[in-house]
Image 1 (cartoon, rainbow, N blue to C red):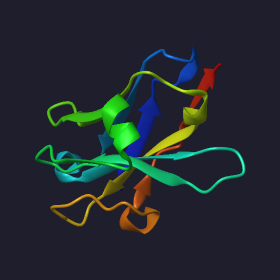
Image 2: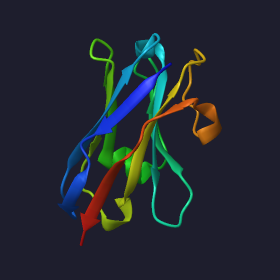
Image 3: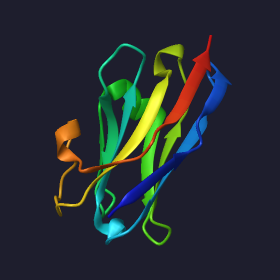
Length: 126
């Protein structure tokens, strides 16, 4: 059983930065694709970014790609989402998810992931 724990969320002002962490345990978690999703109140959970075990990254939009960076440390079984130039529209609960099916690409929908963390709140004030 894979367990994922997110951390690093908080309340910040627009223009600030946060680094989210997702630490995995159980199974061969350092080989999994890890994705980050966010869910704003009243909205669907949406893909933000994901990374393969070898470090190949995929981002949801050009705006995210220009402000967020996903990376991983396989020795620590941890994936990071560095978020810079945060905007009020980034306010959401951020979830990490793991795909243990040995894909070599990043799924961009929820159905591509079997394991989910509990989420961490990110609030950006204007």
